[in-house]
Image (cartoon, rainbow, N blue to C red; front, side, top):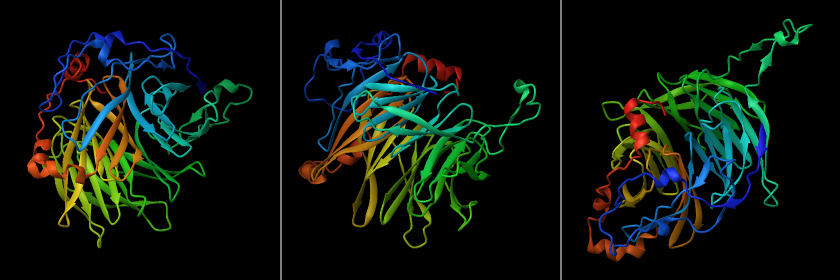
Length: 461
């Protein structure tokens, strides 16, 4: 592994993106003042890029300047980057950095939030399908079906950012058969704890210091990272495992799969093994479940799952029994829901229809309900992965940073402002159906021609 730092040059525009002749999409209803969208008005502000055309496949892209249709929320794109080749499979963010994993076999590190590249780690172990950052610990999964742990050293200056590999799970073991006098004939012993297919998702239990990995080999493995060993392995589903999340309060593990099921697992007390407690029921017919997210606002807890039918199913946890009951479905996406993120009382969903929807959980007369308060428009391909963080949290307004990566080979950073409900109380009284209108926004997906061609050919992306 080699960590490389990028070089600073002037920003430039990717010609491939400029040559895509697609009609501009009207994200939402009416816009008060029509403006002429000149090419120069869509360019990013004059800032320097951290990479050169010859050393990096990343280039600056025009930013989307779509405006919010309603007062409760507004957004704009802070940065937009585009890869010349390969797909971005995973994204995670910390206070200072953004990390991405892709088919380039590199872990890219970006400065938060302006997306200037500060370096990357070269890896020869295949695609990086999943990535997770926790404090100074960075967890990545690779095409050799192994997990790597990294120590991220926060820089005191702009030029001394470092990533140091801690360990690889499981470690490679070599036999000593025929080691003498022919060292080249030594054989690699395949660890039975190693996954047999791509590791698609990871989750970390902070209380128990346990790392969970889900794979396309239909198994979940549990790793004790302090001891660098696998403490449990079990077959969880009958098809690819797509997502895994953990309730940090009670240790429950949630998994979802292409077999159309969501399952809840518990760790046996004082043991390492896990048992299946519940298989959550979905609306028939079953559709592959691609994403999971947990919204834990004590004393209430909600679980969300995104499916290939475009629906987001929601379960609420009973306070006494701890059982999860199906309470509804969030409808709005035209195609498959590929990723979900929760932050405070908001749910963000990315879809194959190239949009990001923001949903808000509200309470009225002790009843909970969800409404779509915004649709973020800007990608030209399926939104593969999302991350979000609170930038400013004041009394009347909350400012979020939303990071999105798409199969159109672009990475975007959005600043989203969510205003307190009482600021738009008068508007709601004038229009009681505002929430229904938000649910019925008409958005016509605009996908890049290259993605449509790959979709028709049935490429596995």
